[in-house]
Image (cartoon, rainbow, N blue to C red; front, side):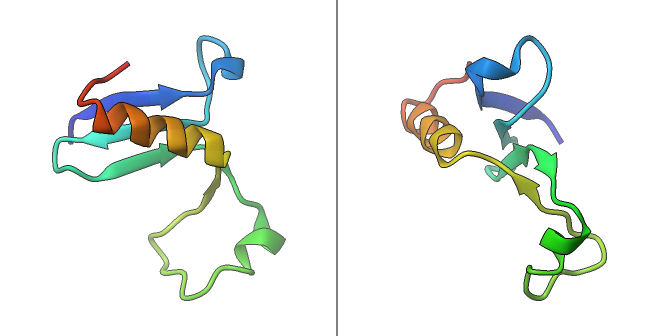
Amino acid sequence: MRLTLLFKDDKSGVQGCPSVYLSDSGELVVQGQQLDGPDMSELQNLLPNEAAVRISPDIVLRAIERYRQGGAQ
């Protein structure tokens, strides 16, 4: 899979997250801080190979804006 960075939190520095990528299959990939056990237990129908991460709505909205513009960061 090839990923193109759409948007990364400006406050995360050179490395880190949260970030949103566009894959070559057209799907979005989200990088963020993984939920811990108690928070994971709140998810519904979580499959064994799935994970959940935290990400600010602002980061998602900015990534969608970048996606609509057809560009990458």
